[in-house]
Length: 328
Length: 247
Image 1 (cartoon, each protein chain N blue to C red):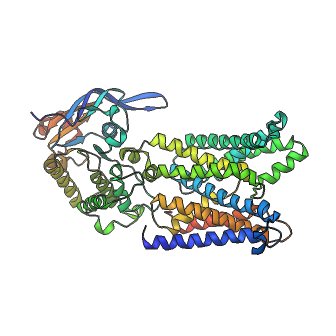
Image 2 (image 1 turned 135 degrees about the vertical axis):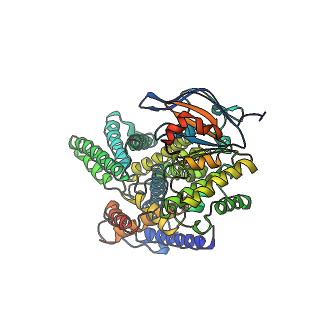
Image 3 (image 1 turned 90 degrees about the horizontal axis):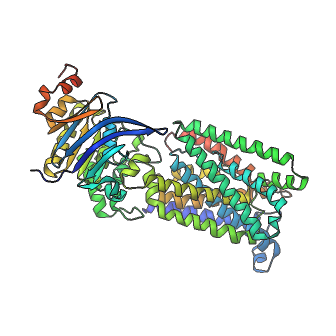
């Protein structure tokens, strides 16, 4: 790592710490003071703290999943949300909540949560495999994105049908969950969310060589000694678990997965993916923390859905980047 | 007389699979290639030159028969070991993701780096040498999708050199090169074969260059391939047909 990279990382780290503080102190309907934290304050420890941790983990997970997807598809515009992978996870969660209510799986906390998590992961895994299958038939990056869009429309339509036939209580929780929220995760949830996500992120360290080789495409990757199909399978699995996990706990969160890796490539003008892995994790959590602080402080009485903010930040950024930089 | 063949193909039928069905491109292939040779592969467009080269580096499994590298069955060689034996230059384009010329050439050293792909001094020296040999020194920090086709081609050739393999496979490497660079490339290949005892297989449509620099020619026509010496080319009917009367 040269000194320029080190400086950039220091700035990112500083922003990360700042955003943590912002989210902890301003990420709710009232401003906290540092003195509140030392006491056994309920709002801080039961509401703010899990929300901030959730933002860090969800941001890291989605950004890393986005980075992996962009490399696997060798498409700088890929991401869990735009390819319909988050929607696949959402659909499976909707299905599992309906099915789970009728089979009473939610009477036990961990069984109930695990059930939702496993459904979300299988949903995102299935959609990723489908997209991968289709990507072999189409050569164009843009067509692939359109197909991903269609996938999320289909998943959305099925979900709407499910919502139409569900009782008012489930309906409300579906709709709110679908907007994406960092606030629904309790400290108990974190016991499942954090270790799994950290495990997945850490496992990416074993794939630094394949990830870098995949940039050259299947043939060259194989010729420099990488088992392409095996690596790709594991990487898809990891990114699906990261996406599914986050979607299960926070709902589908838009644009973090696509925008953060692009931003990272603009900041660190390198092709070394180990640098991008680290920086997407930092950038992803920072952006989500800022978004959280922002959506809580824009209107002091109500907190806005996080997706509204991430879309407002992410979508124009993607459009801008498409115009500005043809190479990413 | 020459010892063990670097590459040996026996009773092979080569081709690929498309939606389950086998499409055979070359049949009855039995060939031996030795170290120190530069073998020029000639044939009309679509005749199977790329299929042959992709088979020889393990990207395509043979439909029938066997391929041995230095006496060992290709299917029994681990990918990480095969990467140290065979390097290939393909015709496909790669780019994006901030990849520079240096990065692509450095990828050639990936079989030799640790699992974090850390480039040590010895790796960097080999990469530097490959970059210099291909005349890319002043272009090494450019993004590869900003390079001209010719410079891109040289980058991929440098990557293959950085792989330090006894076998070099090149699929139409001279296609985008300027006149002088074409000669430079073939001179380099000849030097690598003679001085470093490499086995070089190169497909090209530049028949005059192949005649000038190669030690043998592999002529592919109508799903069959036969090996001739350069002297035999003037009387080889298939070669003359490929030349279209202009040779």
